[in-house]
Length: 529
Image (cartoon, rainbow, N blue to C red; front, top):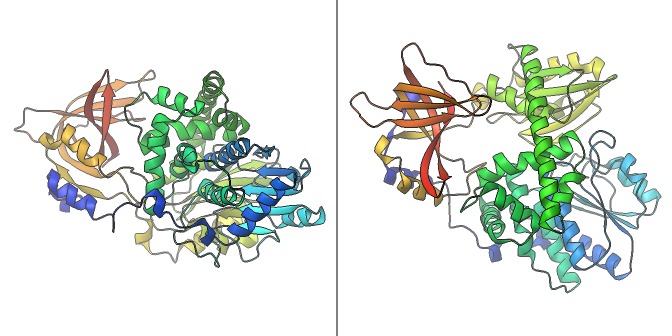
């Protein structure tokens, strides 16, 4: 692959990136009508009726970024009606996932609405029926054959759903439904004001940044730059940039918001989003930062232990540990995928039960692989690239064998990571003009990856370690022996030592670096070959 990498100039790159999009970006006014979502109109009418008749409404969210964002949008919307809404985000450790029977024990309502969960809540739906509670499920996860017996189910993945774009996150489903509620109640609420939170959810939930997702993220990032929402002001101050990108959200904001639900309680993140003033928002954001630091340390320790117990002969890695924090197993699974180049399932054991997360690679559908072996599980759910599951400890060995047997029939090519190198750039082409060119194709993310380039057999001039713990490398290289100009590439979370032949071959991406008002192109290492 590396030998056939073409040399590119800026106009070649422009052509290459233009081919990614069939048509021009949609405008906000072109977003398909929410009424096309199955049951959405029915659900909106029921919510409006509950408001008009002073019924008690409880919202049940989820503890990841998408779930907390969905909850925050709903809470803010109801505050503006104004109408009292009880919002519950289950605790990962005491409640489990979604609208569980445990959560329903503390619900006293006439109407329960779920956001980003509920598509597999069969038992919860039964309890609601017995207690004469109307249940409206809004979700975006893949449904099983048997659906909960709810008043309404709004999920683009339902086989009966005619919504033209299926790959939307939970917060988008909630936002689209609220658009219909607004219409039913003839409210004067500007739905654009929620786009700052919505963009964070789309990016964090790794939705493909094409079609309406591209539009919503683009508009949402603009909204984030001038929103008067206290949480958005804090995010702007923290990032301190003239323009916020999808990668800023993915790497610097989403992990902080996620850390609350992973390590403690997602209400900390919800309080950040819904803070009434910047003082409160700053306090919550600081707390999220501390939790994120703790998450990093916990994750590093667990990753080390997980790597030590990997069976390298398996096509699908399955590892488990007794003291592993269940809030970080998903991230650890992603680290194993990066290191070993195959799907990984990481399980946390407590008593006789194991709970865990799966992450995939390339074109391997981890959801289907797990589903094929669901007879060995107590629960599971998710989508093609990520899933959650639970099973008895005694069944871990049988499940490991079974899923690896299932994986045998998957073509080897499906396991190839999606990183595609665009080409080799000349050193003189790496400048602010290149940054402007790349900016035209933002936001980058899933299904619109930031282009990566190749440096091949470059001479390593010097290596400096950076960061408080000296865990990042700043590598100065010369692409061709005759050149005087050197370029710097940065390898985050990697200590790179001088190779014997003083050469490096690696893929990298180009990002904008803003420091003291000066803008420059920064080269970030993706993979060292």
